[in-house]
Image (cartoon, rainbow, N blue to C red):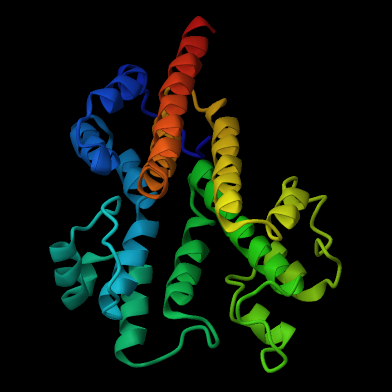
Length: 287
C-alpha cells in the first residue's frame, strides 16, 4: 500500500505479534513495551511509521504539559514525561508541526482562531499526515479526521453540542469545532442537509448520525468498532509488510483504551485482536 518501490517483508515478526502480545505481562503498557521490543527488527523508514501512529498521544501529552493540565500521561506516545519536558525546552527534538505549535504558544499567537490549543495542534498534525507518502498512513488519518469532523458537525447541527445556545451560533460552533479544510470539512460548513450531503462519500455517515443522539458510552464503543472494522479492511491487503504491524498496534491502542475504561470490554477486544490476527495470518500463509 505504499508508493515506494522497495519494501521490507516482516513475515516472522508479523506472525509472532499475537503471541508476543499474549506473553507480555505489563498489560497496562503493552503497546509501548512491544514497540520497544521489536524496534531492532524494523527498517528505519518503517520505524518512522510506527513512531508516527504514536504521535496523537504525544500531541495530547504536549498540550497537557504546556497548559499544566492535571490529566494522566498517555504512555502510548513516543516521549516519556521527562523527554517531553526537555523537548519543549529544545523544540528541534520534536516533529516540525510541534515546533511550529510551541513557537506560536510562546508568542501567544493563535494559529487558527476560535480553536482550542489541542485542536490547533491537531490541525497541524492532520494537515501533515493526511498527505503522507505512505498511502495507509494517509488513508487511515483521513478516515480519523473525517470521522472526528462529521461527528462534531452532526452534534452541533442536532443541538446536542454542550455549548449550544443562542449566543453561540451554529456557524461559530462549527468554526470552533471543525479542523482542517478538506472536502468533507468544507461540505460540513456549506450544507444544511442532516448528513451534509456526505452519505455517498462516507459509508458510515448514517451510523454516526444515529450514534450522535445516543448514550455516550454506547457511542464510544460503536466508534471504536467502526475503527476496528476499518482496520480489518486495510489489513486484508497488507500482507507481511509494515502495514500489518501498523494495523496490529492501532488495534492494540483500542484494546488499551478499553482496558482503562472498561476492563471486561478490554479483555474481550484483546481476545478478538489475537484471534483475528492469527486467523488472518494463517489465511495469508495458505494463499
